[in-house]
Length: 105
Image (cartoon, rainbow, N blue to C red; front, side, top):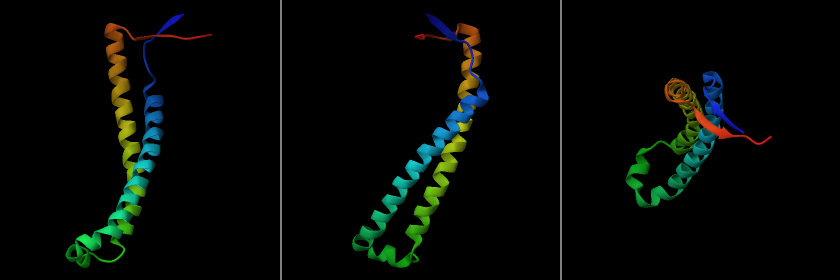
């Protein structure tokens, strides 16, 4: 049985993409933090002049800020993109028809 998705509830799409962005942002923040830890441990060997001018524990502070800031930024951008994409879908689906999908059961 084929059904047509005529519109999406904009707030539910925004909420889903907010939480997906939160999770992806946390993963990216952890990867960012690991990269800064690696750079902080290897960097002084290759660039001692640069690392001598940086205050101690700056890398750890930047890594921690990445773990906090990335989820917030990704979640906000996810919610905004959810509102925009669901709104565009609803407008276009009214004009040309929605996505047809087959559901079992």
